Length: 152
Image (cartoon, rainbow, N blue to C red; front, side, top):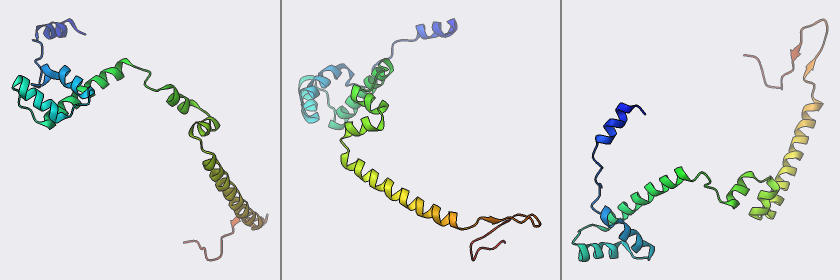
């Protein structure tokens, strides 16, 4: 960073918290960990500290705190996948099926694949029986069209 920018940043005063709940964030998080409802938290803040805050205010504050911590953790933690997720991402099809337990899915897949192969065989045999073009060295090459097709 340029020295001029660093000098400006050093002269700025520290940013004050944007929420009046910020001084109580540790208490709020601890109460949520102990399965206290947002209503109970607002009552404690009102009774103990004289702070009037709505339930939605406390909930939104906690969500914002959680989001900022999650973003910070994601930046610092490059290994976000668990071992099982990593295995699922890098596994072969057979290993994925074993992880998911997809015996029925495998049978359905084989049935669908067999049906697809049979239908392709019948289509190919129909196409192979029909001549695609006729070659005559005296005339130019012409593509044979299906009945009812015509050039516009």
